[in-house]
Length: 296
Image (cartoon, rainbow, N blue to C red; front, side):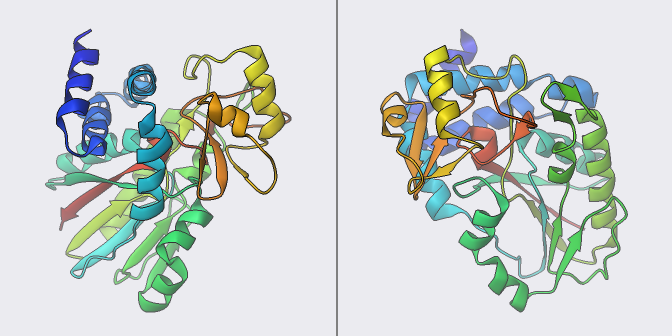
């Protein structure tokens, strides 16, 4: 009850509802738990907050969040430093990263930014003008846990944790663990930081991800599941390919910037192989992304 009351009070009092939502998200995931396993067990608290927000302020999903994703997605290289993209880093990993940085003697600050819609890498790169950024700034790409940087890169794009999240689970088959994913991601992040000569480092993400494993989804009726399954093969579909206005009317789906996307954690039985750690839709952890800044 206290959690609900405080969350509602902030939503009413704040001029910018995103500030309130981000503070609630960060309050769930920071400070991090002592163990990685216990940290990720907080997912149920996140689900509770997302359901509360949808219940009392559905317009946040329908209007506020998609608008900010379309207009405010950004990738700004600091004048005195470097920008590190940790692909698919969510608020969950940010809480752990901040504790790691503090333990290493840094004094990080945390803010938030946005993915675009759909919450995928390619749309984000198009939105922020990544091809032009690459022409103007020295860019490095990291695809393994043994990065080899020159040190003077302005922008580093690391494929973790996204490439590792995709391999945690397919359907009901567990291939890895979320603890292994994070430990490898942190090890890679540490090596990137050690290799960069930048005075100031900003760490951001192109998008986060949503967990759709058992216990972490929104309830939905069987007819609605069937309709969602008919409409989507992934987390988004172009409005040119289908008509999902009925699902929009039921507040299960949002239309934004030419795409239909499921709201929050609504899901349905997927055909073939699928990952329970996914992105492309319109949920808080997919679309509101952390920004961590620290100096060396």
